[in-house]
Image 1 (cartoon, helix red, strand yellow):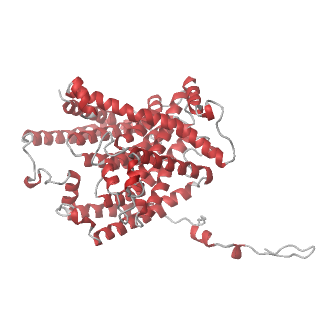
Image 2 (image 1 turned 45 degrees about the vertical axis):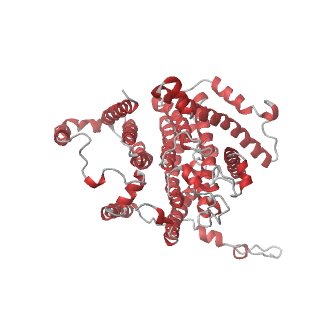
Image 3 (image 1 turned 90 degrees about the vertical axis):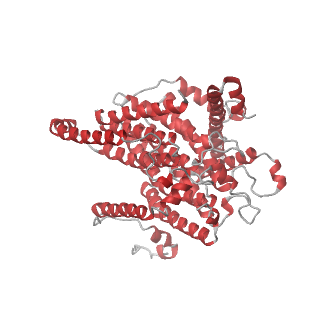
Length: 353
Length: 204
């Protein structure tokens, strides 16, 4: 009996379905939140190790509870609303950021069949939600009624809109290979897809440059260094979040890290074979799929932290130049190359006409 | 009342209320935000119709790109409310006339419509077997409607070129960064070793 079926047997069809979905949402959202807390800790530890420091090591064993202490400090502070702010928009903006960062996880397949909403347009859903993420930032920048926040919001909006274009083309190439927009189908299409033994689009020479470009685009989309221009603490003090305090600031922070974790999970799904082991060899399948998935997620998160610790921030015109003059033509050209190759090798013959 | 019916009335109500608020909100930025809410609820209605591909496209294109640019422009503009309101009396009759015509047309169209039976293209009712509706849209768009599709692409291309022609200008005296030249620069052609004699400077 399925999970939903169990609830429906207890509470009737409608209420049971509602309660089962609610339980599943909590089952995803709660680990994501805990994951965010430990991701912040891991991030700080990795940077510290790269800069030959110790990092957080006071609260709890090995400093593991540092993030919870920081969160408790934030919750106990006073929420300050600037006198010139547009109150409703000002308070709505962090909520939008936070909610959208959690809502994308609905289509994430953690293992074969372990997904809350198995949409057949899953990839477009991810794209739609991530394209709405810009509103949280632009609204906070405008509603704060502060020059720094406004500049940060504008920068972020321009940056995210620019990089979404090339991100879309990269997704087009991946979905042409998989012939599906469903994330589970995309993972399954990578099973033994290279030479019959390797699982993962990244081993495909045609998609390898796409994987690298997607990683860089993901950095820009999540406002991570070297593309953290919207925050740019040296010039804009902290960009769009400068007027926020307490809980509202915490929501921005949590949303940002939930987004980063999501990108670290999406790259494995699109390019590293999701819950499949890297090599299509039977003993590797004895390890459960979700362990492979989490291992790939951790690896990507380490790479994200690695980039932040080592690469200096870009100048804004350089950022725009890379987005529009390098990534956009390159990804568009590569979509043509990939589709031409697939047409030439008869990849599309199986599609119903 | 089933969940779908409840969801329909929820989305439709919020859509209409936010559409009214778009034109009544005092602050133009709030107007754009209400417009985004109405776009989003229209996408919700598409999902209820089973057209999830169109719903996602609506969110990606209109909410994710077009409305962001609206918001950008409206935020940057210095809008003078007094001059905006002064035209109200002058434009009201014209606006009412347009609204009346549209209302009449909607009434005419809906009164002749039989619920559920009125599919405009007979052979196009349900996707063929083994095909999701997203694949079906693609197979129709790129075969049967390819000329219309390509033409709409051309219209967009022309308008894009027009926008670039109108706004692009080459200013004199600005310094530009040539990344290729910077990368191609080597220590050999950028530096020079000198041994200046005592009391003499270096010629640059």
